[in-house]
Image 1 (cartoon, rainbow, N blue to C red):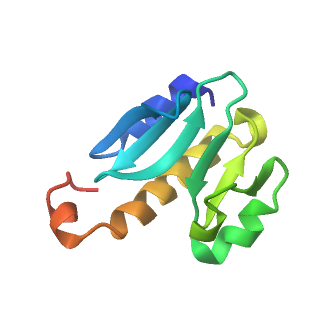
Image 2 (cartoon, rainbow, N blue to C red; image 1 turned 120 degrees about the vertical axis):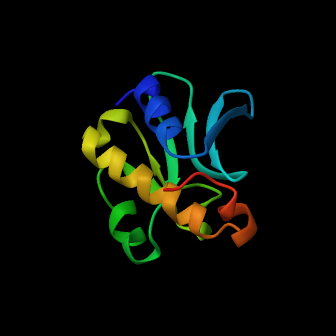
Amino acid sequence: MDIESLRDFCLSLPGATEAIRWEHHLNFYIGGKMFCISTLDAEGRVSFKVPDEQYEEIAARPGMIKAPYLARMKWVFVEHYDSLPDDEWRALLTDSYRLVREKLPKKVQSGLPAF
C-alpha cells in the first residue's frame, strides 16, 4: 500500500470524498464524516475506525497503536504502509467506512449510493 493506492481504494467506496486538512493530512469522508486520515508523506501514517470489539486486539498489533486524539472513538494509528498486507488494508478501511456510514443519520444515509 502507498498513498496513491490508499487514495484510489478509499475513493472507490460509494460516496466517499476527500479533502486535505491540517496542512498535510489527506482525509476521507462519507456523508461528511471522516473514516480515514493519512499523512501525505512517504511514511504512510494512517488512522481509521475499527469495530469496538476488535479495538484492543488491533491496536496491540505490531506497527499499530491507539490513535492519538481519536482513541476514545475506537480509532487506530498505523505507523507505516507496510505494517499491513494490502488485502488487510482494504478490509480494515472498508470496515471503517461501514462503521462511520452506519452512524450517519438515516436521511443522510438514504442520499448515499448503495453499499
